[in-house]
Image 1 (tube, each protein chain N blue to C red):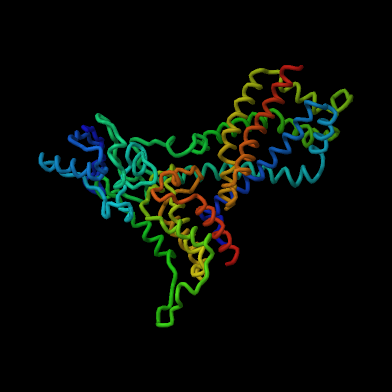
Image 2: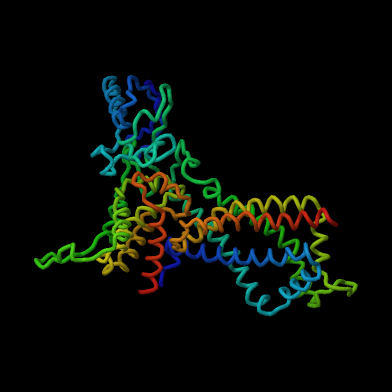
Length: 248
Length: 225
């Protein structure tokens, strides 16, 4: 496959940045999108051009590092995949592909397609955990009975890899699917009840502080989420937030 | 609850609550208006009751005005905040791939409804307030004293085809607004049952049938008088 790529280039956080066109050749349809980017960078390096910076790590859809807004969608046109799992067979020979970084005020561009998603880390630090006394008398996990339904729903929420596709896809750059998933995975389990009130209040406060937009329930986040995190988690977070504010 | 309504989720709840109230108001407004098609007398009686009963005039009407203003003002505030959350726009964005047109354009359907409300207030509400509270005529009777004036006023308003056209267009926008807004309000209020098909179906039926009913009333009076 031979492709034309329109890629966002930005030397650093202060640079204005611009879209630049590149031709990339000899792309196999079996390649992943990131492998195609590797080929492009090799070709750029051979020409003495600065390679395109992009985030990646595990390259198997687990770490949530790869981002990219491809042809107007987070992680590209396929469903339930990260960019590393997106295959070039989704495109045709001669296609023009537009590649941009995830756009949000809370996700500033560091370089080219790399954005700073540490806002998610700060939201997690605000309450996305449970405190367990591990001083030697820790209870066996299996001794706490949890219904299959609750366990399944908590596990579904916990599959969020924090990639930020929800924010990138949302017309309001809202992080509510991410925060909803992180609140839900603990709200559904008995271990999460002790800190439930502080957790949801602190995480929502941090989310608002980071400058994310408000959810208007378009559902774009759910569609584009590589892990299929459900909007149900946002509704649960809303209930938890109301309940927490009534309690204290 | 301190700071609840300043938070993003608190504002979602407030938008949902005002939306629930406005949707309930719309239903009762339609229930009275449709009477005009079947029985002018029943329409006159109901209109006179709503226009003179103290609880409607001095309790529900101020709540309604507050609800309308709050919903619009907060809608604009949230839209401005949401736009500021993405300073640099995408060069290419395929919104249609993951969301409905209605959900992405609530601000525009809302603006069309606001423009209609201005027309509607000039047409009905301001003359009504003028008659009752400026002129002090609470009788609800025609100038000649022969029967109630409400049905006659309604029929007269729908003589002008331009006004009828504006009403039809406005109610199409209302339907588009409700198609997303109805289920969105339940989602914002934390309802987990919106996944259930029956409630989704009810939302669709309400969003289409109520505006369609208002359009029917306007066209009925335009073509039958």
